[in-house]
Image 1 (cartoon, rainbow, N blue to C red):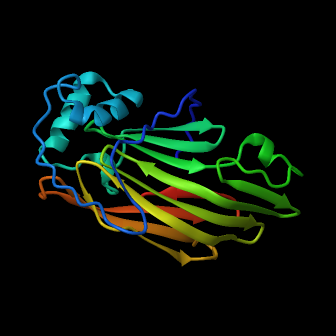
Image 2: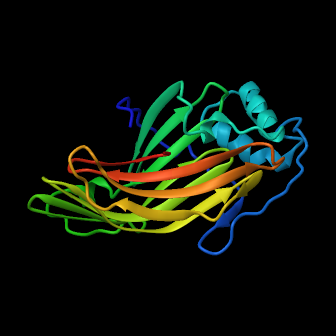
Length: 240
């Protein structure tokens, strides 16, 4: 995660209006969408315009991103191999968000749920913050039922996890509730597995969600990954 930090007063990521995929069915959308003229004249594209606007993307660039999606192309924000041109953090009371902006104007927001500062105080015991709880003792920290999310213009991936850290290693004790929210295309039923329960040396504990996104034209596709990584000193999430 980038060390350049900018504290914001609001969560820039806005969940797109779409279909939620839980543990039952994949998203199956075939939309046949026309290219948008503008946010005002094409309400079907309003969620994308709103998401980009909330993340500070200029109007002209928004039009380019939406035109790209309408043509069936996948924006850079959804591709794990693309390097962002701008990265910063948002430190909020119940989440630490990594915002990544790409050369085509698209935006990816990784949301990592954490307890608030009061819950993190020594001796505070357990306190629920929108489901995420934290307990601490001599030499260890435990986090339970905390959400990890990645939001882009076309898909949101998320799951909940419980993990712990001590002076020797990090450990993932549970991972559950995998979801994919897909827009303007389709996503397969997500799988979620704990690949490595305990960190060892340079290898962090690892839980990973996987799905597969296909554009509404069927001409472009991309693997979707969301990973939780934990070692003795910290926990973080990635899209690979």
